[in-house]
Image 1 (cartoon, rainbow, N blue to C red):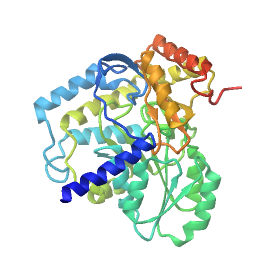
Image 2: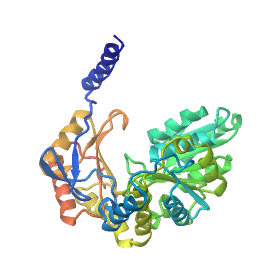
Image 3: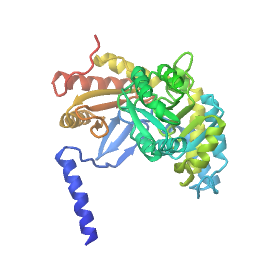
Image 4: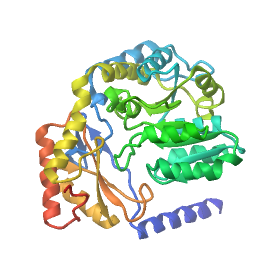
Length: 395
């Protein structure tokens, strides 16, 4: 029977994951507020969420979302190109473009959808896309969908990017260079001025996925604006699901580029628009990002305190990775922290390269000083008990 062969196929794949310690399960999690969660009957303090500013539970964001449901209904009802483009979209896109200093903005359904739609809209079989070797999976998905030639360059290395472009650029039509502003698994920042200079020298368009920098760095405007002067980046992508606390993503660019997205980005054209409640919440969140200086500063302050207490290298973002190496050791360390009352999920291949399994710790504006200190002391105990090797100790 066809169904039996399908089940055998699925089971064989799952058995291989189990054999390599890579089988995952989705666990019901009740987020009581921005940092406190209930899981498997236990109350825990979460240090693995991307809600950097705590806006998922901000009263003004929730109120705007609830009001939009009453006024516009629960869903958009259609693609944006049909009847799903409610007038909240325009307000949000104007605010995003103003914050990022571009002519226009285009909102997508998610970060994955943005990257998988933007790249094929800008490149084709005769073109070249060059991606940082640690770039997010959605970048590679979008690049493959474009059918362009794909190359990678060494992580955060403008010199290697120049070598790749010297070798591969001459045979291509258009060329895109794609990187992250803050890398989601390592928390390090891209050297955007150097990358921008190399891209310009080789007549390539630089696209920055700033999912984890937007709302935190550069006065909330993102990684590009953490440099002085800010480099010229023609394609600034970001998400609304992390610091903004809601859902969706955006591309900030020139008016012609944004209009092209609304006509040619398949992940925008062939999908239902975001619910009005999500867009309404995002509008308020963007206003808070622009205005609440103290809230923006707290995640980085907590990260610095944590790293200083544990003896780790200074953080570049609110993401602090503790590289364990072995998958089983990462699972054991996560379990030990959970016993101490802290949720820090282990990150394993294929999300990160083999041999680099880790605890990925994230800090938010709503964590208290006592919670940060408690996690630091719990991790120090693991280090002293040699449950995990001491990583990246500062000198």
